[in-house]
Amino acid sequence: MEQLTKNVFTETKIRGCNPSIVFTKEGAVFIDTAQWITTLLEMRKFALDRGPIRYLINTESHIDHIFGNHWFAGECPVIGHEKLKDTFWKIPEAFNMTTYDYSVDIIRRQDPKGLKYMPSEEEYIVNPPQITYSDRMTMKLGDHTFELYYAPGHCDCQTIVYVPEEKTAFVGDTIFKDCQIWLHSIMPDELMKTLNFLDTLDVDYIVPGHGPVCDKKAIYENKQLLYDWFSAVSEGISKGWSKEECVKRINFADRCPVDIGQADAMDYIQTHNVMVAYDYLTDKLYK
Image (tube, rainbow, N blue to C red; front, side, top):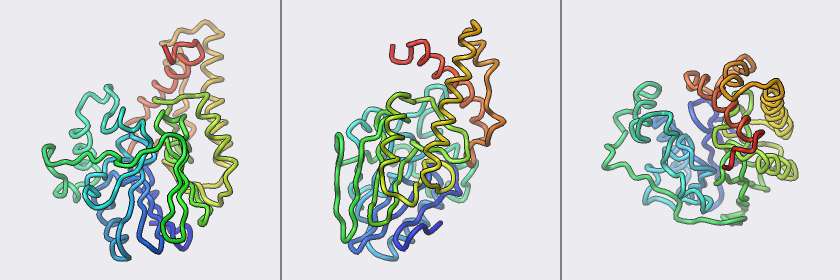
């Protein structure tokens, strides 16, 4: 794990989201959970060696952020936005398998040592949030403050977790750093507003959903990526290209890799990013 401050640790070198831990005088707070079981168990042991785990916060409902919730069931409350329940433990239909089978497939291929710790489908505890909020929530634990903000954009249940004492914000997939951005569940107008809000926070560290820890420069890098996607598709539409022609002709795969362990998703990302941008620009995204 990477240590950002005296009390903040994160893991950015595995497949899936960047799971993190904030240590307080009264115990640890996890923010998202690792998609690799071996890393998840190592992080749990690291935390428990210091004291109790008091809370788990999910920044969104996508599987790479919530997969490890099973291992916190009965140990601590889970916190998340109230809309998490609508998409919790679901994956895109295009994956053509159940969420459980998808998870087992990832563990088998990328974390084989963890396969023996994977429970059966019947024993797996999905463990959605027991504590929810609608717009903003503030939690005090020891000397630390955890400010949770509803931050729609990447999806409609997104949370930004801001810990002012550490000058750190955990933003989930609001930010992608040095890797392909996923637009498959995007709300473009809301995402721009959320990026603007993120810029108002007093932070030294931003823990993105994917890629290395960054600072506020990443906000504008992500804005530029969004502008580039929509600009490219807009230009295609102006040339009379159909959605299918835009998908065939527009591709940003050469810009940067997909995050660790997800190279096989490159075609999916390119296709769906174009489709989402096309639907938004032609006013079909919300219809």
